[in-house]
Length: 342
Ligand SMILES: NC(=O)C1=CN([C@@H]2O[C@H](COP(=O)(O)OP(=O)(O)OC[C@H]3O[C@@H](n4cnc5c(N)ncnc54)[C@H](OP(=O)(O)O)[C@@H]3O)[C@@H](O)[C@H]2O)C=CC1
Ligand SMILES: C[C@H](CCC(=O)NCCS(=O)(=O)O)[C@H]1CC[C@H]2[C@@H]3C(=O)C[C@@H]4C[C@H](O)CC[C@]4(C)[C@H]3CC[C@]12C
Image 1 (cartoon, helix red, strand yellow):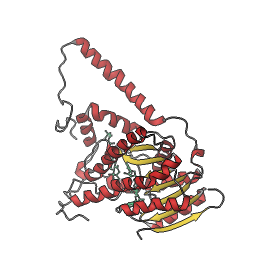
Image 2 (cartoon, protein in one colour):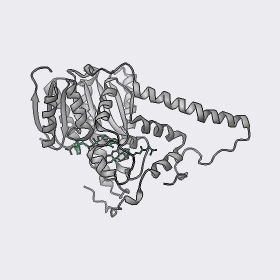
Image 3 (spheres, protein in one colour):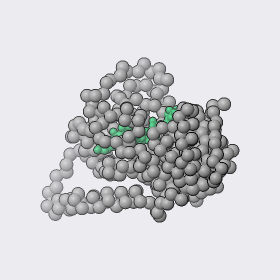
Protein backbone atom coordinates (compact mmCIF):
# COMPACT_ATOMS: atom_id res chain seq x y z
CA UNK A 1 0.00 0.00 0.00
CA UNK A 2 2.58 2.59 1.07
CA UNK A 3 5.62 0.48 0.69
CA UNK A 4 7.41 -1.33 -2.03
CA UNK A 5 9.13 -4.44 -0.71
CA UNK A 6 12.24 -6.00 -2.11
CA UNK A 7 14.47 -8.59 -0.59
CA UNK A 8 17.32 -10.96 -0.98
CA UNK A 9 18.80 -13.65 1.21
CA UNK A 10 22.27 -15.02 1.33
CA UNK A 11 22.03 -18.72 1.98
CA UNK A 12 25.19 -19.22 4.04
CA UNK A 13 23.92 -17.83 7.44
CA UNK A 14 21.33 -15.98 8.81
CA UNK A 15 29.71 36.15 16.37
CA UNK A 16 29.34 37.90 19.22
CA UNK A 17 31.16 36.30 22.00
CA UNK A 18 29.40 38.30 24.69
CA UNK A 19 26.08 36.96 23.59
CA UNK A 20 22.80 38.02 25.08
CA UNK A 21 21.46 37.33 28.53
CA UNK A 22 18.02 36.50 27.16
CA UNK A 23 16.65 33.10 28.08
CA UNK A 24 19.69 32.24 30.06
CA UNK A 25 19.16 30.55 33.41
CA UNK A 26 22.57 31.70 34.66
CA UNK A 27 23.46 35.30 35.32
CA UNK A 28 25.53 36.73 32.47
CA UNK A 29 27.47 39.04 34.81
CA UNK A 30 30.50 37.74 36.72
CA UNK A 31 29.84 37.61 40.44
CA UNK A 32 32.11 39.80 42.55
CA UNK A 33 33.92 37.79 45.16
CA UNK A 34 35.13 39.63 48.22
CA UNK A 35 36.69 36.59 49.88
CA UNK A 36 40.15 35.75 48.40
CA UNK A 37 40.02 32.11 49.48
CA UNK A 38 36.68 31.79 47.72
CA UNK A 39 38.44 33.17 44.62
CA UNK A 40 41.11 30.48 44.93
CA UNK A 41 38.41 27.88 45.35
CA UNK A 42 36.80 29.06 42.14
CA UNK A 43 40.19 28.92 40.36
CA UNK A 44 40.68 25.34 41.52
CA UNK A 45 37.18 24.51 40.35
CA UNK A 46 37.81 25.96 36.89
CA UNK A 47 41.34 24.59 36.44
CA UNK A 48 41.05 21.14 37.96
CA UNK A 49 37.58 19.96 38.76
CA UNK A 50 35.80 20.96 35.54
CA UNK A 51 38.42 19.37 33.21
CA UNK A 52 38.40 16.26 35.43
CA UNK A 53 34.63 16.12 35.31
CA UNK A 54 34.78 16.54 31.52
CA UNK A 55 37.30 13.73 31.22
CA UNK A 56 35.25 11.47 33.47
CA UNK A 57 32.08 12.12 31.51
CA UNK A 58 33.86 11.62 28.18
CA UNK A 59 35.19 8.26 29.37
CA UNK A 60 31.76 7.31 30.72
CA UNK A 61 29.86 8.25 27.55
CA UNK A 62 32.49 6.96 25.21
CA UNK A 63 33.43 3.59 26.67
CA UNK A 64 30.26 2.06 28.09
CA UNK A 65 30.03 -1.29 29.86
CA UNK A 66 32.05 -4.17 28.48
CA UNK A 67 34.11 -4.47 25.34
CA UNK A 68 32.79 -4.29 21.84
CA UNK A 69 33.30 -7.29 19.62
CA UNK A 70 31.98 -7.29 16.05
CA UNK A 71 30.79 -10.88 16.62
CA UNK A 72 28.08 -9.36 18.84
CA UNK A 73 26.19 -8.43 15.68
CA UNK A 74 26.51 -11.76 13.87
CA UNK A 75 23.07 -13.17 13.10
CA UNK A 76 21.32 -10.20 14.77
CA UNK A 77 18.16 -8.83 13.11
CA UNK A 78 18.55 -5.09 12.60
CA UNK A 79 16.31 -2.41 11.04
CA UNK A 80 18.16 0.70 9.77
CA UNK A 81 16.07 3.68 8.66
CA UNK A 82 17.45 6.34 6.31
CA UNK A 83 19.78 3.69 4.88
CA UNK A 84 19.93 4.83 1.24
CA UNK A 85 22.66 7.42 1.87
CA UNK A 86 24.91 9.05 4.45
CA UNK A 87 25.42 7.56 7.90
CA UNK A 88 22.56 5.06 7.50
CA UNK A 89 24.16 3.60 4.36
CA UNK A 90 27.50 3.27 6.17
CA UNK A 91 25.80 1.56 9.14
CA UNK A 92 24.25 -0.95 6.72
CA UNK A 93 27.72 -1.80 5.35
CA UNK A 94 29.26 -2.25 8.81
CA UNK A 95 26.37 -4.46 9.93
CA UNK A 96 26.64 -6.49 6.74
CA UNK A 97 30.37 -7.02 7.25
CA UNK A 98 29.59 -8.17 10.82
CA UNK A 99 27.15 -10.80 9.50
CA UNK A 100 23.85 -9.25 10.64
CA UNK A 101 20.44 -9.57 8.98
CA UNK A 102 19.48 -6.09 7.77
CA UNK A 103 16.17 -4.55 6.80
CA UNK A 104 16.81 -1.16 5.23
CA UNK A 105 14.37 1.64 4.54
CA UNK A 106 14.21 5.08 2.87
CA UNK A 107 12.18 6.52 -0.03
CA UNK A 108 14.49 5.98 -3.02
CA UNK A 109 14.21 2.43 -4.28
CA UNK A 110 17.09 2.52 -6.76
CA UNK A 111 19.54 3.63 -4.06
CA UNK A 112 18.24 1.07 -1.57
CA UNK A 113 18.66 -1.73 -4.13
CA UNK A 114 22.32 -0.77 -4.59
CA UNK A 115 22.91 -0.69 -0.83
CA UNK A 116 21.23 -4.10 -0.42
CA UNK A 117 23.41 -5.58 -3.19
CA UNK A 118 26.56 -4.25 -1.56
CA UNK A 119 25.44 -5.57 1.86
CA UNK A 120 25.08 -9.05 0.38
CA UNK A 121 28.57 -8.80 -1.15
CA UNK A 122 29.96 -7.71 2.23
CA UNK A 123 28.58 -10.80 3.98
CA UNK A 124 25.17 -9.84 5.41
CA UNK A 125 23.24 -12.84 6.72
CA UNK A 126 20.36 -11.43 4.73
CA UNK A 127 19.52 -8.00 3.31
CA UNK A 128 16.26 -6.53 2.07
CA UNK A 129 14.57 -3.19 1.82
CA UNK A 130 11.17 -1.55 2.17
CA UNK A 131 10.76 1.81 0.44
CA UNK A 132 8.37 4.55 1.49
CA UNK A 133 8.10 7.84 3.31
CA UNK A 134 8.30 8.29 7.08
CA UNK A 135 6.01 11.32 6.81
CA UNK A 136 3.34 8.69 7.42
CA UNK A 137 3.30 6.77 10.70
CA UNK A 138 1.43 4.02 8.82
CA UNK A 139 4.57 3.43 6.76
CA UNK A 140 6.70 3.41 9.92
CA UNK A 141 4.49 0.65 11.33
CA UNK A 142 4.60 -1.24 8.05
CA UNK A 143 8.41 -1.46 8.14
CA UNK A 144 8.28 -3.09 11.58
CA UNK A 145 5.55 -5.47 10.38
CA UNK A 146 7.87 -6.52 7.55
CA UNK A 147 10.57 -7.44 10.09
CA UNK A 148 8.04 -9.49 12.03
CA UNK A 149 6.87 -11.34 8.91
CA UNK A 150 10.41 -11.95 7.64
CA UNK A 151 12.31 -12.71 10.83
CA UNK A 152 9.63 -13.31 13.47
CA UNK A 153 11.61 -11.01 15.80
CA UNK A 154 13.96 -8.06 16.05
CA UNK A 155 17.17 -7.38 17.96
CA UNK A 156 18.05 -3.78 17.13
CA UNK A 157 16.04 -0.83 15.83
CA UNK A 158 18.25 1.96 14.46
CA UNK A 159 16.21 5.16 13.97
CA UNK A 160 18.30 7.41 11.74
CA UNK A 161 16.27 8.99 8.90
CA UNK A 162 15.50 12.72 8.63
CA UNK A 163 13.31 14.60 6.19
CA UNK A 164 14.54 17.65 4.34
CA UNK A 165 14.76 20.89 6.31
CA UNK A 166 16.30 24.16 5.13
CA UNK A 167 19.45 25.61 6.71
CA UNK A 168 18.47 29.26 6.97
CA UNK A 169 16.65 31.84 9.12
CA UNK A 170 13.33 30.44 10.37
CA UNK A 171 10.81 31.48 7.71
CA UNK A 172 7.64 31.22 9.77
CA UNK A 173 6.34 28.16 7.93
CA UNK A 174 4.43 26.26 10.61
CA UNK A 175 3.38 23.47 8.22
CA UNK A 176 7.03 22.73 7.55
CA UNK A 177 7.66 22.41 11.29
CA UNK A 178 4.72 20.01 11.53
CA UNK A 179 6.04 17.97 8.61
CA UNK A 180 9.58 17.58 9.99
CA UNK A 181 8.13 16.77 13.41
CA UNK A 182 6.15 13.96 11.77
CA UNK A 183 9.11 12.67 9.79
CA UNK A 184 11.95 13.11 12.31
CA UNK A 185 10.07 12.53 15.57
CA UNK A 186 6.60 10.97 15.33
CA UNK A 187 7.73 8.17 13.01
CA UNK A 188 10.46 7.30 15.56
CA UNK A 189 7.75 7.00 18.21
CA UNK A 190 5.52 4.92 15.93
CA UNK A 191 8.32 2.51 15.02
CA UNK A 192 9.27 2.14 18.68
CA UNK A 193 5.68 1.36 19.69
CA UNK A 194 5.33 -1.27 16.95
CA UNK A 195 8.73 -2.83 17.58
CA UNK A 196 8.51 -2.97 21.37
CA UNK A 197 6.88 -6.42 21.74
CA UNK A 198 9.65 -7.96 19.59
CA UNK A 199 12.39 -5.99 21.35
CA UNK A 200 11.08 -7.05 24.77
CA UNK A 201 11.15 -10.66 23.63
CA UNK A 202 14.77 -10.43 22.39
CA UNK A 203 15.90 -8.01 25.14
CA UNK A 204 17.08 -5.88 22.27
CA UNK A 205 18.11 -2.29 21.64
CA UNK A 206 16.74 0.97 20.33
CA UNK A 207 19.32 3.33 18.84
CA UNK A 208 18.17 6.90 18.26
CA UNK A 209 20.39 9.00 15.98
CA UNK A 210 20.24 12.58 17.18
CA UNK A 211 22.45 15.63 16.95
CA UNK A 212 24.27 18.20 19.00
CA UNK A 213 21.38 20.33 17.65
CA UNK A 214 19.16 18.31 20.00
CA UNK A 215 21.21 19.38 23.03
CA UNK A 216 22.50 22.83 22.12
CA UNK A 217 20.72 24.97 19.56
CA UNK A 218 22.66 26.68 16.79
CA UNK A 219 21.24 29.19 14.28
CA UNK A 220 19.43 28.30 11.02
CA UNK A 221 18.15 24.94 12.24
CA UNK A 222 15.00 25.87 14.22
CA UNK A 223 12.56 23.23 12.83
CA UNK A 224 15.21 20.48 12.69
CA UNK A 225 16.57 21.30 16.14
CA UNK A 226 13.05 21.10 17.61
CA UNK A 227 12.66 17.53 16.34
CA UNK A 228 15.96 16.47 17.89
CA UNK A 229 15.17 18.07 21.29
CA UNK A 230 11.84 16.21 21.19
CA UNK A 231 13.65 12.89 20.72
CA UNK A 232 15.72 13.43 23.85
CA UNK A 233 12.65 14.20 25.98
CA UNK A 234 10.62 11.28 24.70
CA UNK A 235 13.28 8.58 24.77
CA UNK A 236 14.79 9.68 28.10
CA UNK A 237 11.36 9.46 29.72
CA UNK A 238 10.79 6.06 28.15
CA UNK A 239 14.14 4.84 29.48
CA UNK A 240 12.97 5.64 33.03
CA UNK A 241 9.78 3.67 32.46
CA UNK A 242 11.68 0.68 31.09
CA UNK A 243 13.80 0.64 34.26
CA UNK A 244 10.75 1.03 36.54
CA UNK A 245 9.00 -1.86 34.77
CA UNK A 246 12.09 -4.07 34.35
CA UNK A 247 11.90 -3.91 30.58
CA UNK A 248 15.33 -5.01 29.39
CA UNK A 249 15.41 -2.95 26.19
CA UNK A 250 18.29 -0.48 25.95
CA UNK A 251 17.91 3.04 24.55
CA UNK A 252 21.03 4.69 23.12
CA UNK A 253 20.86 8.34 22.15
CA UNK A 254 23.56 9.28 19.64
CA UNK A 255 24.60 12.92 19.83
CA UNK A 256 26.45 13.69 16.63
CA UNK A 257 28.38 16.78 15.59
CA UNK A 258 28.97 17.78 11.98
CA UNK A 259 29.53 14.65 9.80
CA UNK A 260 30.72 14.60 6.19
CA UNK A 261 27.60 13.19 4.52
CA UNK A 262 26.81 14.62 1.08
CA UNK A 263 23.59 16.28 2.17
CA UNK A 264 25.02 17.90 5.29
CA UNK A 265 28.13 19.18 3.51
CA UNK A 266 26.01 20.58 0.67
CA UNK A 267 23.70 22.30 3.14
CA UNK A 268 26.22 23.91 5.48
CA UNK A 269 29.81 23.93 4.18
CA UNK A 270 29.50 27.52 2.87
CA UNK A 271 28.59 28.67 6.39
CA UNK A 272 30.39 26.30 8.77
CA UNK A 273 34.12 26.18 8.38
CA UNK A 274 34.74 23.45 10.97
CA UNK A 275 35.90 20.21 9.30
CA UNK A 276 33.23 17.49 9.37
CA UNK A 277 33.97 14.10 10.95
CA UNK A 278 34.00 10.93 8.79
CA UNK A 279 30.68 9.18 8.26
CA UNK A 280 32.25 5.68 8.17
CA UNK A 281 33.75 6.01 11.67
CA UNK A 282 30.60 7.70 12.91
CA UNK A 283 28.48 4.77 11.67
CA UNK A 284 30.73 2.26 13.44
CA UNK A 285 30.58 4.21 16.70
CA UNK A 286 26.78 4.23 16.57
CA UNK A 287 26.63 0.45 16.14
CA UNK A 288 29.23 -0.03 18.88
CA UNK A 289 27.36 2.15 21.39
CA UNK A 290 24.07 0.40 20.58
CA UNK A 291 25.61 -3.07 20.95
CA UNK A 292 27.16 -2.03 24.30
CA UNK A 293 23.76 -0.69 25.40
CA UNK A 294 25.33 2.70 26.21
CA UNK A 295 22.97 5.43 27.33
CA UNK A 296 24.55 8.11 25.13
CA UNK A 297 27.17 8.44 22.40
CA UNK A 298 29.01 11.69 21.73
CA UNK A 299 30.64 11.72 18.29
CA UNK A 300 33.04 13.36 17.69
CA UNK A 301 33.61 13.58 21.44
CA UNK A 302 36.14 16.40 20.99
CA UNK A 303 33.42 18.89 20.00
CA UNK A 304 30.21 17.35 21.33
CA UNK A 305 31.22 16.66 24.95
CA UNK A 306 32.59 20.18 25.64
CA UNK A 307 29.49 21.73 24.05
CA UNK A 308 27.17 19.60 26.18
CA UNK A 309 29.13 20.42 29.33
CA UNK A 310 29.29 24.16 28.58
CA UNK A 311 25.55 24.27 27.88
CA UNK A 312 24.64 24.44 31.56
CA UNK A 313 27.86 25.86 32.89
CA UNK A 314 28.39 28.83 30.51
CA UNK A 315 25.45 29.02 28.09
CA UNK A 316 26.02 32.57 26.83
CA UNK A 317 29.71 31.89 26.24
CA UNK A 318 28.79 28.71 24.30
CA UNK A 319 26.16 30.52 22.23
CA UNK A 320 28.73 33.18 21.30
CA UNK A 321 31.23 30.49 20.33
CA UNK A 322 28.66 28.74 18.17
CA UNK A 323 27.70 31.98 16.37
CA UNK A 324 31.36 32.79 15.81
CA UNK A 325 31.73 29.44 14.00
CA UNK A 326 29.07 30.49 11.44
CA UNK A 327 29.80 32.67 8.42
CA UNK A 328 26.44 34.37 8.57
CA UNK A 329 27.23 36.59 5.57
CA UNK A 330 27.03 33.46 3.39
CA UNK A 331 23.40 32.79 4.34
CA UNK A 332 21.08 33.94 1.57
CA UNK A 333 17.83 34.99 3.20
CA UNK A 334 14.82 33.25 1.66
CA UNK A 335 11.54 35.22 1.40
CA UNK A 336 9.31 34.68 4.45
CA UNK A 337 6.76 31.91 4.14
CA UNK A 338 3.08 32.72 3.59
CA UNK A 339 2.27 29.74 5.80
CA UNK A 340 1.50 27.37 2.93
CA UNK A 341 4.13 24.74 3.75
CA UNK A 342 4.26 21.50 1.82
N1 LIG B 1 25.43 14.70 8.75
C1 LIG B 1 25.50 15.45 9.85
O1 LIG B 1 26.26 16.43 9.94
C2 LIG B 1 24.70 15.08 11.03
C3 LIG B 1 23.70 14.11 11.02
N2 LIG B 1 23.00 13.82 12.13
C4 LIG B 1 21.94 12.82 12.12
O2 LIG B 1 22.39 11.64 11.47
C5 LIG B 1 21.30 11.01 10.80
C6 LIG B 1 21.67 10.74 9.36
O3 LIG B 1 22.05 11.95 8.75
P1 LIG B 1 22.73 11.98 7.31
O4 LIG B 1 23.33 10.66 7.03
O5 LIG B 1 23.56 13.19 7.24
O6 LIG B 1 21.45 12.19 6.40
P2 LIG B 1 21.26 11.94 4.83
O7 LIG B 1 20.53 13.13 4.34
O8 LIG B 1 22.51 11.55 4.17
O9 LIG B 1 20.29 10.68 4.81
C7 LIG B 1 18.98 10.78 5.20
C8 LIG B 1 18.29 9.46 4.93
O10 LIG B 1 16.91 9.60 5.25
C9 LIG B 1 16.12 9.26 4.11
N3 LIG B 1 14.93 10.08 4.06
C10 LIG B 1 14.83 11.39 3.71
N4 LIG B 1 13.55 11.78 3.77
C11 LIG B 1 12.82 10.70 4.14
C12 LIG B 1 11.44 10.47 4.34
N5 LIG B 1 10.53 11.42 4.17
N6 LIG B 1 11.05 9.23 4.70
C13 LIG B 1 11.96 8.23 4.87
N7 LIG B 1 13.28 8.39 4.71
C14 LIG B 1 13.71 9.61 4.34
C15 LIG B 1 17.05 9.49 2.92
O11 LIG B 1 16.72 8.69 1.81
P3 LIG B 1 15.62 9.06 0.69
O12 LIG B 1 15.89 10.45 0.27
O13 LIG B 1 15.88 8.01 -0.33
O14 LIG B 1 14.31 8.87 1.36
C16 LIG B 1 18.38 9.02 3.48
O15 LIG B 1 18.48 7.64 3.41
C17 LIG B 1 20.10 11.97 10.97
O16 LIG B 1 19.29 11.52 12.03
C18 LIG B 1 20.75 13.29 11.31
O17 LIG B 1 19.91 14.10 12.07
C19 LIG B 1 23.22 14.46 13.31
C20 LIG B 1 24.17 15.41 13.38
C21 LIG B 1 25.00 15.81 12.28
C1 LIG C 1 26.83 23.79 13.30
C2 LIG C 1 26.58 22.56 14.13
C3 LIG C 1 27.72 22.39 15.07
C4 LIG C 1 27.53 23.25 16.26
C5 LIG C 1 28.40 22.74 17.34
O1 LIG C 1 28.92 21.66 17.34
N1 LIG C 1 28.57 23.51 18.33
C6 LIG C 1 29.40 23.16 19.40
C7 LIG C 1 30.82 23.21 19.06
S1 LIG C 1 31.42 24.83 19.00
O2 LIG C 1 31.24 25.38 20.31
O3 LIG C 1 32.82 24.76 18.62
O4 LIG C 1 30.65 25.56 17.98
C8 LIG C 1 26.32 21.32 13.32
C9 LIG C 1 26.19 20.10 14.22
C10 LIG C 1 25.06 19.28 13.68
C11 LIG C 1 24.78 19.84 12.34
C12 LIG C 1 23.41 19.62 11.66
C13 LIG C 1 22.85 18.31 11.79
O5 LIG C 1 22.57 17.86 12.85
C14 LIG C 1 22.45 17.58 10.54
C15 LIG C 1 21.64 18.42 9.64
C16 LIG C 1 21.65 17.60 8.35
C17 LIG C 1 20.91 18.28 7.28
O6 LIG C 1 21.06 17.53 6.09
C18 LIG C 1 21.36 19.72 7.07
C19 LIG C 1 22.39 20.18 8.01
C20 LIG C 1 22.17 19.87 9.44
C21 LIG C 1 21.09 20.79 9.95
C22 LIG C 1 23.50 20.11 10.22
C23 LIG C 1 23.93 21.58 10.24
C24 LIG C 1 25.18 21.85 11.06
C25 LIG C 1 25.06 21.33 12.44
C26 LIG C 1 23.96 22.11 13.14
